[in-house]
Length: 422
Image (cartoon, rainbow, N blue to C red; front, side, top):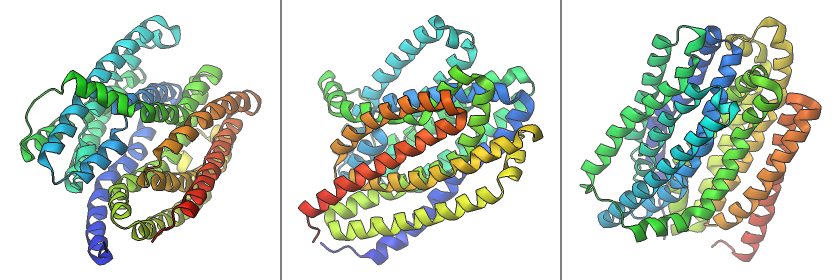
């Protein structure tokens, strides 16, 4: 079956502009709010906020249960089958609700009993609002049906609510505990509307999935979820580890670097999610055309990342001054930031290969490679940080990305030799 690239490109261009406007707020928000929080609350308290948020983002993947990959693919595949969509919608939310309740219960015990968390109980308990907001988040379903207008609107409203609440209510150093609460509220309000929109649009019924359906849902996704937990651990454990070993002040400096690198990561995640359903569909209908489309998209992405890293490298000191890093710390943090700019380039390559693996339904290999690579990464992070401080930790992240890229490349090379594209 031949797909008309002209039609796909025309629609993709329009959707990308719409989606990009909404996701642009995800890139812009930390640039607006981080200097303000550091200025009002101090770098140490900002480090605490970053640790709590990282912890929330770490456990979110359990609540998501692979919905942003598996769920999007299922909705995209069965978008014309209303009965199937009703089933996907009901089972996903029912299964994930059980996970949400279980996670909140376990975290409550953790936050009460472990001194590291109990010393900052209000800060950590308020991340529950982020977990609830992510559970409600309907963007996975909207992405599957290619409704990028609605996704953009929900994202923009979410970030505006967050910014407004932070700028109004964070007025003193002790107000840092509310930052993550406001992030959660910014998610809950618009995402609740988004869920109601999906229900109304497809005339879904408010029904809970059966025990068997939920059981099958949890059984089918647990291997992928475990791999995502390990991946999330790789992404968010550095700041938690730093706070344990180096204190919240060092965690604050790392968080600033992470926020800047996070702009690249967010951009890559946005383009990954935007093009993923289209690449899945194209590869499903015509593998050669799909892979050609994947190559064009990711070559453009990697080129853009290289240009952007060069820009940040040249302007690293003014950028850090914008983030309210004090003058006596600028030189050291600027050196670390410039060194860390190798990471976005490596991540852009690993993300592109990962996207191809998922599109080719090779997620089993992804699962196999993720768990050992993350365990290796944590071992290196701990060792390298103890010896070389932040530079060592950043080096360990780079080594892990290179290892993953090599593993993906070797596997895909063997795959294409055995499965010639037509």
